[in-house]
Image 1 (cartoon, rainbow, N blue to C red):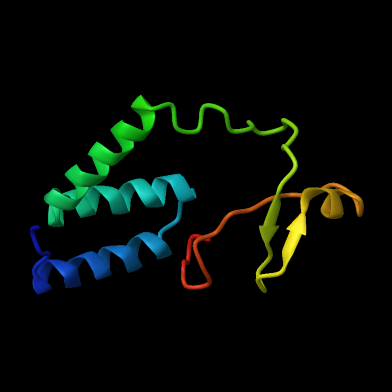
Image 2: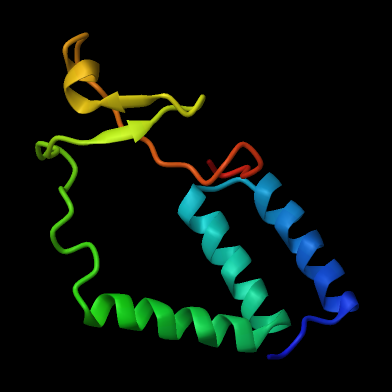
Length: 108
């Protein structure tokens, strides 16, 4: 597998900082960063494109609830790892479900 050179890794880190700090929507910032990644590490971008194409070809996300639709019953961990059910959340009022990668992700 191709490796990202240290010079390009540094350029990509700089682009990340620039995109993180730029004005614009999250989508605009992510698109700008993705474009930079294509320039610096095309092999990785091509692999991601193939993965996204496979997910789409196999109907990934087609059965997921759309904004405003009712969620099916579920249990998910909260930020401390404790499992919470949808029912326990909505018994206290409306609930918003957010997925985030981790505390280290500036977009999450």
